[in-house]
Length: 597
Image (cartoon, rainbow, N blue to C red; front, side):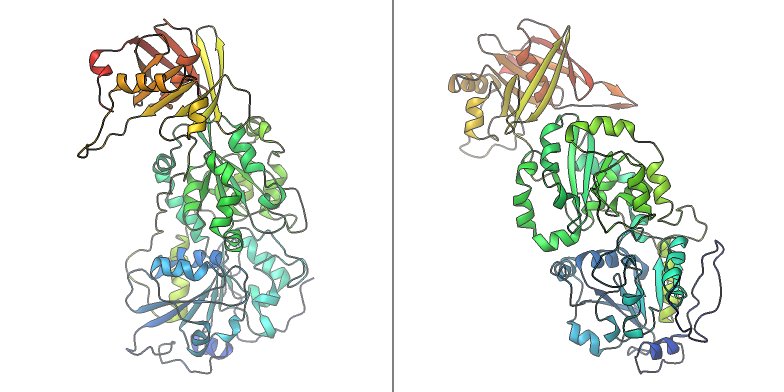
C-alpha cells in the first residue's frame, strides 16, 4: 500500500498523457517559488527578474560525476539561447564528487561554491540525483534520472526496498514538496513512483531518456568508432561493471584479464566500461595499475564521460552485472547480452534489469564465451529495454524536445525557434596499449594454416613466440622465433640512418640467433620475409570480400603462418580470426629488397 500522504489542494490537476501516463501540470512559477521556500515573488511573466528583465538563470547541481554527466547530456536544451545563463555547483555529501568539478572545468563551464549557490535564487535548478541538501537551494527543482530502469535499492539508506532515484525520503526531504518536475523515461516509472508516493508522482512527467537519444543519434558513427578503437572485423566484447560490493569487478576482479588473455587476438577485442563512482572512488591511476595486465593485453578502458557510450555503440556483445548500462545497449543495438552477476540484495525483482539478467545466458568462465554468445536469444535485450525507455518511435517528439518544453515552461520563457538535437558522441580514445608479442598457436590442416595469437606475456602452450621489433622488450625479442617490424616512415631527418628491407632482415637474423624468421610489414596486403637459410620472399595477401566490404587482418599473423609452413610453397590459405586469407609467395624483387624502411 502507498504511504498515507496528505494531498496539497490546488497543486496538480488530474491530467493524463495520451499513453495513459499521468502528467504533471505545474502551477505558475510564483506558487512554486513560494512552495520551495524562495520567499521571493515572481515578476509579472511568471519568473523572477535577472537584471535585464528577459533572461533566466539555470543552476546545474551535481552531487557526483555520474549525475554531472547526465546534466551535460541535456545542455542542447538551452543551446543558442543568450537569455539563459548556465552555472554549476557541487552538492556536498557524496563520496563520489571528487571528479565532478574536474569535469566541469574540462568543459569550460562556470561553477559557484555551494554556499554561494544557497544564497542566490535561480529561475531553475536542474539535478540528476535527489540526494543531498537540495532543499537549501532556492528555485524550482527539476530532477532527471542518472541511470536506466531504476533497478537498484541500497539497504541501509532511505526507505526500505525503495528503488534508488524513486525514494520519497529523498524526493521530499523533511516533508517538503517534491521537485517541480520529475522527468522520467517510461510511463511505467510513474506507476512505480505512484505506488511509493502519489504526491511525488503527480509532479512527474514522461520525457524519455536524453542519454539514450544521444546514443541512438550516434549509431551511424559506429564504423568510425570501431576504426578509432582498431577493432576491424573482430568482435568487440564489452564488460560493464557498476559500482559497489555487488559489482562485476568486486565479485570477479580477474575476469578482464582472463578474457583478454584467453580470447584469440585476431578474432576478439575487449573493452571495459566502469561506473563513474568507481572511477571517483579508486582514481584513474589506481584503476590502471589494477588492470595493467589486461590493459597490456589490449583491453580498452573506456573513460566515464562520453567515451563509454561511444564504445557501447561500437560493441558486438556485452557482459554485464546488474548495472543499467546494459539496458542502453539493448535498446540501441539489441546485440547479445551475457550475465555475469552473482546475485545479492541490490537488484530489484521485476525491474527491467532483473528481467534482462533472468533471460540472458550466463558466463561463468572465459572459455565459455563463444558458447554463451551462440545461446543468446535475439530480442531478449530489446524486450527488457522496452519497459525502461519510451519508444524512440513515439510521436510526442524527441526526449530533448519534450524536456525543453517542460523546462522553458518552468522558467517562463518561450523556447528558441531552432530545433533541439542531441549532440553526437565523440570518437573514442584508442587503446592505450596493444600487445607487441604473441604466443602463436598454429594448426596445419591440409592446405590450410590456422593461426591463433594470444598476448605473449601469458604462459600458455604455443607453436612459437612472435614479437614486434622495436616495440617489444629485449627479453621477448631474444625469445621470439619470429621478429617483424612495420613501416611508418616519416620524412627523414638530418643525420638519420635508414635500413633497407633486406638489410634489416639480415641484421635481425644475425643479431638474434633464436630468431628463425624475420619479416617486414609494408602494407595491409604486402610483406617481405626470410626464413633462416632461405631467400627473401614477397608475400601478397588477398583479403576476403564480406558483405560488400574487404576485410583485412593483421599481416603479422600471415607471417606466423609462413614461419610454420615448410619452405618452398607458392601459396598459403591462412585461417585467421575465422576468415580465410589467400597468401601468394614469390621471390622478392630488387625493388622490394631495397625499399627504405
